[in-house]
Amino acid sequence: MSDNEETGAAQPPGSTVRPLSIRMADDLRAQLEIIAQLKGHTLTKEVRVALEGWVEAAKADPAVQKRAEQVRAEIERDAATKRGAIEAIFTTAPSTSRRGGRTAAQGQQSE
Image 1: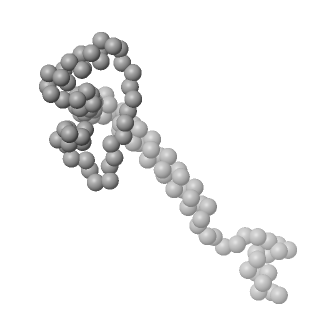
Image 2: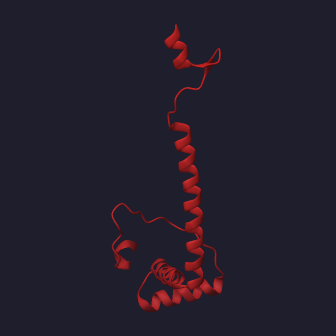
Image 3: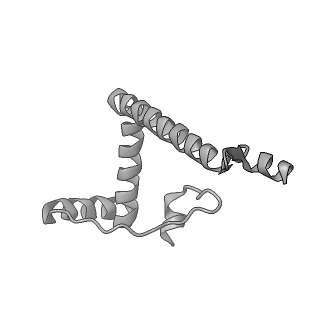
């Protein structure tokens, strides 16, 4: 059975499962291996299930939610600044180059 099949969770279309190498103390690894064996799962599945639970708990944490709102606001400010910069670069305005005190358009009309 593959790791994808054993989780019972369907992967969203286009998503990939990527390996993650982590370092842990021998005693923690031994405990995880025993738990996985007792439950009939692989070590990979037990780690994935634990991480999924930790992520869900973190998402429900008011402190994490508050910080996420702060980060979102920072991202929005950055995006607005960059949108303004792009608009300033690519918005075409009448030519202001001068020919003898006249704009380019005025210079062409008098020639």
